[in-house]
Image (tube, rainbow, N blue to C red; front, side, top):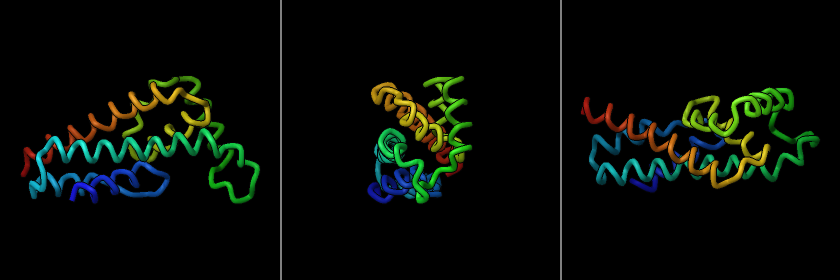
Length: 140
C-alpha cells in the first residue's frame, strides 16, 4: 500500500494530472501503516515528483524550439516572470494544484540551486500531507 501511495504522490507532482490525497486518506482510514509512514511515503513521492519537474526544467528547456516541446512558450514566460518576482519562496506554493507543478518546472529552468529547491519543496509537501492527515483522522 505504501508503494502505491508513493507512486500516486509521485505522479501527482509530475506534469501528469493526478491526485494523491484520496490515496492518503484511504491509507489513513484503513490504517495500512503507522501515520508517520503514510505521511512519509506520500511526502517523499510528491517531493521526488517535483524534483523530476526541476530536472525537466533544468535540462530539457533547451528543446523549447522543437515542435514536440510540450510547454507553451508564452505561459512559460509568464511563469518565469512570476518566479523572478517572488523568488525561491514561491516554492512554498508547490503543494497547490495547478500552479505547483509549473513553479517547480520554472525553478529548474531558472537554475534554482537544487539544495534550496528540495528543502523548500519537501517542507511544503510534507506540511500539506500533515494537514490532510489531521483533517482525515478527525473525521475517521
